[in-house]
Image 1 (tube, rainbow, N blue to C red):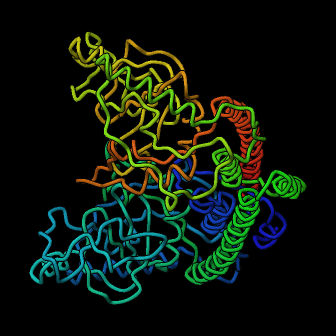
Image 2 (cartoon, rainbow, N blue to C red):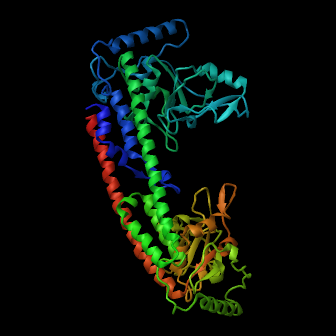
Image 3 (cartoon, helix red, strand yellow):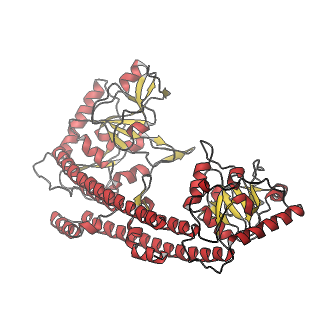
Length: 587
């Protein structure tokens, strides 16, 4: 079977094997890896270096003749003192050979075919601000060399010192050897730059593009993984790199292979673009149809729009992003009062607010809470949509007894202190009591920072992660636990407010947009304060309606999770099919 036939006959497997990233932001493409196409690219490269990509030509000069010429050229360079004589490399044993080569090919060690195999500067000059670019491994990406964003610039003296050692020329191969091992690219012009030690530069007797493509193959990548040293950052020594096995065909076959690789990678590019365009169009269609639900003017129109969507449910909700969009639409309908029918007999939310005000005044009088600053009413200009009869626009602070920061005491793993919740214990919407740290808290802090059922815990500061302002609802009392200073505890009037309703509302785009707007970044740390949280606008329904909405949302979100679980199972099957197809092609 030709590779073209392998691609076209199984196009559905290559294009439908998708993998969802766990650490992605919004948007379909930002969340999805085109796993099948990635496997196809790997397969093309691996077939190429095994001699299975293009037909063999018995009239080709055997690789042994090419290797003789390379050896003769190296000997002449040594004779002319242009390079140093290399130490003999060990013979290649049969056990070392990862696979059998076609007739006329040869296994060699990388060092034996290179007249130059060195790395960049181990002691780079200071950044000059301008001058000659110095590149690091980050500048070698996707087979290309990024010379426009160097790690630093060096002056002329620094350039001359480094360039005298590496002498980078057009046709050299650059290879990353520290950090992300095994990324490669060919120098395609005479641009002047130097390297940091994370990049090696090679001049070989092979076609440069063939050698660079080999470094990207599965076989080569396994070599880098097996021989990389170090803990925090992996690196491969030049001595170990020089012993790497390289499969060598004739020079003309190298040229045919590179042409075929480029042709097939172009097909992969087209397939990838078609897949991304299809995913984008699919997601836009889903979001457009879900928007019709949200824009429905009454329950009859909502029912009609939902019927239209439900007819095509199996084709609409086929990605995690589309299911997430459905969940957001459900929450948005809930906060707008469109998810469940309204009951005109419910006690209006205004009555709840009056009771809260009375209870608040009593608690202040008894000295149990401090008198709060008056919050501004939600103006008509601030109201993004009209609420049903009996609902009220409020500020979050109006339904709270307090917003309180956690302890600033340093915590560690010693068990003779008091257990303190940190971000790892509350992120993801659930409380985890694993990996607890302990702090030496005073009796006053213990009393002030204990946690009760229905408390909301907000993340108020964190690094560059997009979790600031996320909240977790305590579904059990944790009076024997405290919480850290980068968390805020929000305690509500539990008799008048359904805490689960507020917790669900905090997950809507409507609330998230309010939370994210005031977030500040100070010295790389994102922050939001209690005043900003207190001023959040909320749509408050009657108490009974809050509970009905929660019950409905629980059922619908459970359905969404079931849908996502089935989708993930189907995706896993597609991944296995792509793997099996790759394995079969290489066997």
